[in-house]
Length: 495
Image 1 (spheres, rainbow, N blue to C red):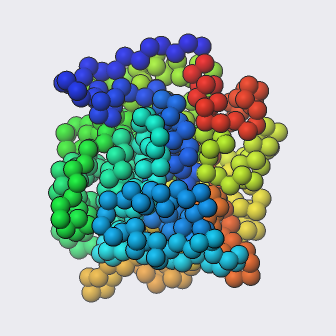
Image 2: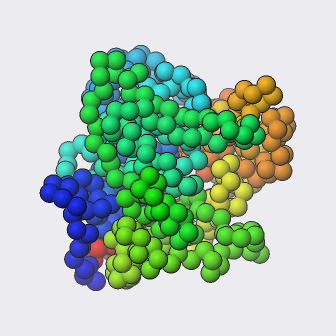
């Protein structure tokens, strides 16, 4: 079906972009979703951006992703090539000395740990976070003139300022964020682009009233001789309710440049149903009329929007455009394409089971330590398998989803409901919150072949997230085969 011609909003001035567009650009029709840790890697984002749409890298745990790629020997040289372009004085040399292993670490040898994120953090940790995000965006933008975005989770507040700054150093065009209320991101982008310290308020459980805790990045600490000027990227808030769209748009301080309106079938985290949580007979959250986004009301806010979740079927793009959307965001089709960062064996098994009609993707209400429902593909040998989950020793050794809490005496500690229940309870947490929690940090890294090596020769088991609407696959495979590419997905969407 032909796609209607894109008519962006009027440009606010000469040489500037339409609202919601990257500077100097028109709005993309297709946004490739920023999925998992490394599933939406630079190879996938570059393929999509090269074809004229918005390619997006996942911005979660890119410090760890970079460190582990270097420890595997960086066989294609891409990580070292990106580090060679990193403008931080001396940072590339320090990172290579600590993590690069020519030829890769020995089989069975565990990966070296990286500094954990925290309110204070460390200079080495901030530097690695900046470098990891710079490298992923730099590689995604390499060799073409298309637009590239980076996707973050609002729940990972402690990592955000350094991560965003690294992406901006590489010239990222869009920042996208979901899994929370990203009201402070516009101010953060403004501050970092202007060379001012960027701050985010951080929620600390049990903190004394009036006490403010912040995650902070001051570029002057990274560039003693003066930071380079940065271009502010456009910001798209990934949301699931009309009320939240209106709340963010009410003030220039909190307003994003556009919205991604994500339905409950989209992969990864999703917002819980409004009102009292009700589970279906299959143990999944039940969504009702209150969870439907009013497209007319969102359109009236004057910001461009894209629709996400179940948008690959016939007529979906045209329908979204007819409803006033600039286009659609698509995740699962790209997660299953050749350029995806997902381990090849997992991708092949997902495709085989989906085409056979035997793949089930559950919206697990309690799997994620973040507290949001999370889509989990039910594959044997992964953390979806209760036997695998029960056999894994619970620990929190990475800590991206840890929650800060106030300890006795006013100091800040950290806890995660996926850690051992007794440890979580000792830290003041409700032990009931630990039931069924999966370690997404380790599991998602394992999904892209970067899982920690364990004693005895094994590795951390993966956890695979995918959207629940896979009805498009037979049609896509019929025209492009099972080894389809990102370009095939775009051709299928735009036909």
